Length: 449
Image (cartoon, rainbow, N blue to C red; front, top):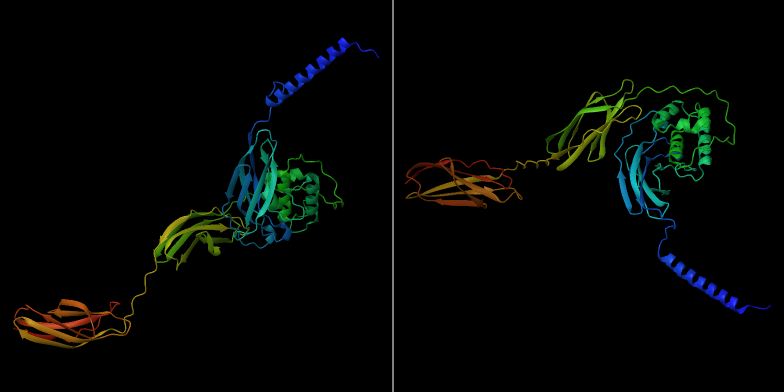
């Protein structure tokens, strides 16, 4: 084939030039952004919030707990939420004792150019007696570039509703558990009252509607509530369960009457003396929700609880010296708790030391008075005391007034000078280290010259 050499060389030159331009443009593009290049996503701060619960439905003990603390980490964020103590009262039916909810809200940064940030959490729970369980519940989830509502809980069942990867399967499993439960029908009413803010009965749709008369386990239903509230996936249409539902004639659940929690007023903590504080307050409750129980706390620990009436008081003795904090809580027959009373701090004085033993007393005997003349008088006597009660002090009296005192031994004497001429009386006593005095010696009167 014949090659037109001038055209060939021209083509080679054009190709080489294009290659050089491509390399230069490519290098420049790596060092700068062109107007048509996509801009990286900016850093944003999103709000993450939700409810926190401590349930123990796997054991079916119905004892429900309450959150103690929640530690959250996400990027540079490290924050701990401390939840107040919620006292759970005694209950005839343990299934009524649903878990208590808390809440959290944090601000999480999504870095520039990133779509998500990992958030990890550690949850500690209290039992129904407010004791903190040492077990730490852990979990994590991704936070996107939009505000997020996500529930955190300690649910311990086989299918974890708070973090389940398959929303539809989790919902169906939960509905199946509801259908399979058959306890007291009052439980579903109570659960609905507790979880009404979540509108769980609307979200579960027909599956829960058909199961309404077959009472759910409280913890399982609350787990479903958390699952639906926390999921970012739109609620799917109800899927038929693997086992058919039993025929039930659904009927609407009657609304519950408004329930009021007990009220504490006039709380007082009065220091009565060393180691002794008196606590008193007044109690009010909704008719039909008695008996009520009064719970007394000192320095954060419950020290006494008993059924009480419209007034309650308790004497606490043997308290250590120093500052102590007092508060009370009242629960009604269903475990509904009042607000905590004000926390009062009181300075308690120490117990007074026991009085010294008064027996046996020391002794002062055999008093001798010698008149030397010129206002000079010598006085002497014998001293006795029990071992361990020394040192002892000797006291010399002239005409009823103490004229001299000093530590002494088994025999004590003193020379007095400058005593006025005339009749004078002399006697002596002894005191030990506890301040216990002997009987005085016999009184001797002498004419001083």
